[in-house]
Length: 142
Image (cartoon, rainbow, N blue to C red; front, side, top):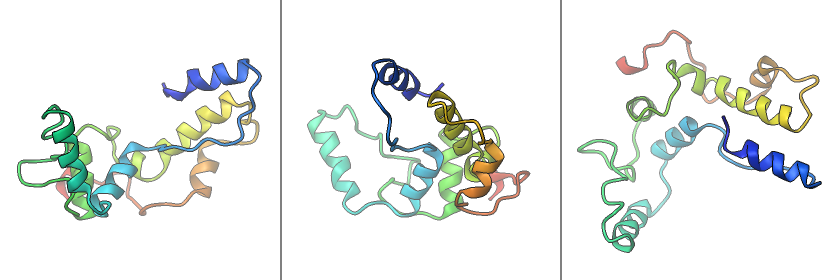
């Protein structure tokens, strides 16, 4: 389930109106975009986390023994990392072709009573596509 569902239900039951929902609807796309174009000074942020947490977060920003998250990488490398970290569906194409995002949006639409004319395929077709992906592509062999 989505962690936001209980919050939405509480807000709606209390009489609040939901005007907009902002957030990351797919962690895989967020991770991939972060890896291919990391924000400036991300290494400094990582060092701050290590220092301020007395080392508790040391190493959290590593994806492998040689790559740090602060260093940009290729799209295929970012997808391989996402698969390795267990962030993707069994078939990563479902994450990258908006299937997962469409399902998240449908769950939110149902909670908000807005799902009358919306279907997952319609949402997928009307959304931006990060890349055109063959659903049978072996991502680990990229």
